[in-house]
Length: 328
Image (cartoon, rainbow, N blue to C red):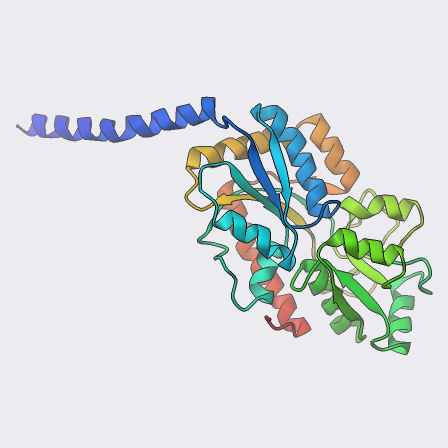
């Protein structure tokens, strides 16, 4: 009887395991069977959009299905992020975003979604060496020291553009105000592309921006790079010093890019996309592209990405507190 008892339990366990294993195998061979929509929360030409196109090229060829980029800018990324949070968890709607994903928790009193409960982390794709502070060539400052002196002589008359309230490009500007004792005026935009456009056009003096989109403008002399917010100099612009090097030891923040599905997306689908990104970042094509953009490949596991997000949120909370930024 005891033997029969264990046989029954074994049969039940096999009955539970076999369908799940069969489903995983089906996903491996049949998913995706139609195009995947990749929502980018900022404008075309923004740093996130540039990264989305790198991912699009790699995944389209590897999955055998089109990855369709859907730019939905607005509210510092909240609009697109909310769309993904509320999408069907069927593996066909995906989000690509950056530090605004965690920054919005700090900047917004009540989000229409929960950044932990409503998303399935796929991977952190890459990280940057930091944001570049660039100014219009007409700004009479060749260095951060000269910029600080100019800002002190003209309190609240100089402004910096950000990609939105609560965005990392906003936080670092307020951090500079605090650490340097100056009063730069913050002007939020709907993305890095329009922010940079207005710096180039001298509608505003400066912006903090990823090397992903600003490199051509620096090389063409349309903006001047003064400093980098990361801990190490960027290999694509080794002549530009970090803020830490020039007397701001507490000034360090890097950018990053990640992918999410809506919560409850089947784990085999998450695993499939994660695996393909890991294969992509070791390819010569993507390595070369990331090097050109001044980015470092990461391709973390979902668990590693979840841990990173917790750490990034804590970092941004510390910076917001130091800069006196209150949620709106």
